[in-house]
Image 1 (cartoon, protein in one colour):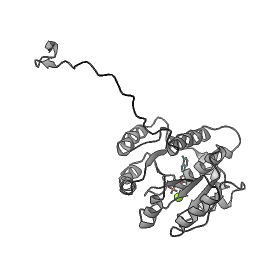
Image 2 (cartoon, protein in one colour; image 1 turned 30 degrees about the vertical axis):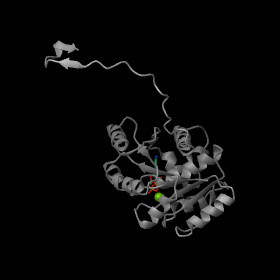
Image 3 (spheres, helix red, strand yellow; image 1 turned 45 degrees about the vertical axis):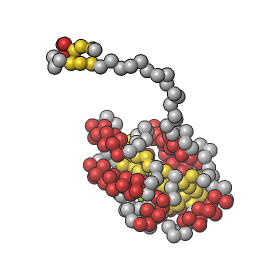
Image 4 (cartoon, helix red, strand yellow; image 1 turned 45 degrees about the horizontal axis):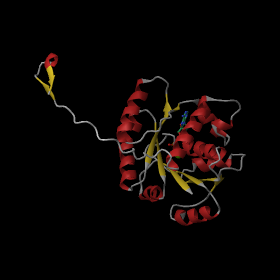
Length: 237
Ligand SMILES: Nc1ncnc2c1ncn2[C@@H]1O[C@H](COP(=O)(O)OP(=O)(O)O)[C@@H](O)[C@H]1O
Ligand SMILES: [Mg+2]
């Protein structure tokens, strides 16, 4: 069983939205059975799930202290993926949850507030030695701040190559317990979630781990380049 924890210190970055969407997408892509845990006392993910007509993914009522034992039970029941939503804080309880993860997904909006708060989340996850991936969420198309956010997040760590854009269907679909993939018709939002899950699944299964390069034949000796200071007069010795 793989465990994905969605975490970030910043409220409103999209933790609950991504936790629900990734769980539903993973289930429909065949990576299930998928289980969801809401570790946020506010219970937004639980509220969403309670309005849901579909029976999957399954929802697990637990607490942070009980989580390790409950995870054993879920493993025994044949759950293949556990997605855990967390509150916007960096407490010792969140550290306990992150410790149990195979991958920490850190959503960030391309906003100065989100980007400024990312460092503290990264510090905690790296201190605990867990792999992380950023997801740029709520991006406006062609906005300059989106490119700046890509640069900043890439400096902190691995950024998912799929950007989730700001679209009303993310919020609207969750009102009655659904996701953008469960709305009628095709949408760019649903495609983004599908591509994002595809990437995360590869990370989880080790598919995208750097592979060892084949041994290269010895290279010819490198010739020293001597410059005279005048770029027009570079000599090779
Ligand atoms: N990509 C998006 N496009 C539009 N609205 C979004 C998107 N992601 C999140 N939202 C909305 O933003 C608000 C905060 O998202 P939420 O997932 O609850 O954040 P968090 O769990 O990090 O506090 C919610 O109203 C949600 O519907
Ligand atoms: Mg939330």
